[in-house]
Image (cartoon, rainbow, N blue to C red; front, side, top):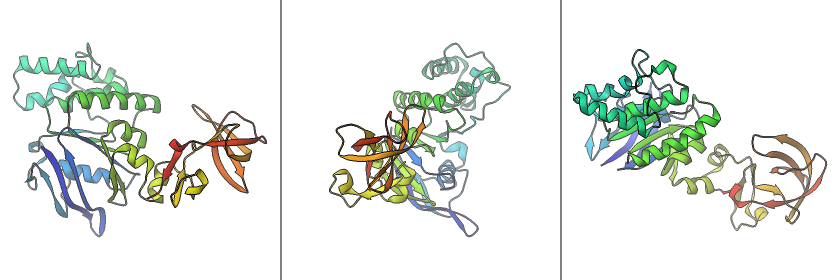
Length: 316
C-alpha cells in the first residue's frame, strides 16, 4: 500500500498555498514534510486528509483516486498540535473512541486500548481524566487514539510543537520508536529539523508551496539543494569548499563547523562568547571575516580552529 500525490496545487483565490507537489509514501515508511511556517506543508497534509480540496492534481491510495472520498472514509488517522482530546472522557474513553465508531465489541476494544496505552508508555492511566495529564501525556493519548483503528496512514501536523524543548526531544525519540514498532505508514508535518530527522525515513523540504528536496535525513542534512535550504537547516556562513579542504564550489558552515583545537589549521581572535544550553558559542575573526565556532576560551584570546565536517554542508 502507498500514498501518491500527483501534481497537487491548492489555491485560495489567486494565492497558491501549494504548487505542483508530487510525493509518495511507501508502505511502512515515515516521511517528514519539513519547512518554515507558511510554506504550505499543513495545507498539503489537510488536502491528503480530505479537509481541503485540491485545485488540481490527485491524491491516490494504492492507485485509487481519493477525490470525493470523505475524511471519515479514507482510513487515515490524524494527530494535531493540540491533540484535540475529549476533556469529558477518560484516557481509555478517548483511545476507544475510534474503535466504538468502527463497531468493535467491548472486550476487543478494551484489549486494544490497554495494548496501546502500554505501547505509548501510559500503562495504568486508563481511568484518568485527560485534564489531569501533562502536555506530553496528552499527546501520547492523542497518538494512541489515532492508532487505535489501525489506520492505513497516520497524518501528524506539528504534533510536538506545543511542548517545551526537552520534552519535545524525548517524545520525538519515543514517537519514532512507536511508529516503527507499530509498522505505521506516516506523514509528519514539522518546522523542526531535529524532529524531522529523528522521526523520518525520508525528509521532504518545502519552500513557498513547493517541495524543493527529498531524501534520507543524512543526505538532506549534509547536501542541501540550495543556499535557502541550507540556511533553513542551520548554515549561517557560506564559503568556497577550499576553505574546509573540500573539492566543491561552495559549502555552508553551521555553528559547530569550527571548534577550538590547538592543532587546527585556522587561526583567529575571539570577538564574542555566548553560553548555550550544551556548549559555548564563539564569534571568531579570521583574516578579517567573522565566523561562529565552539570552544571553552575567552574574548580576546588568539585561538586555532579545527574543521568539523559534521557541521559542514555541501551546497547543491
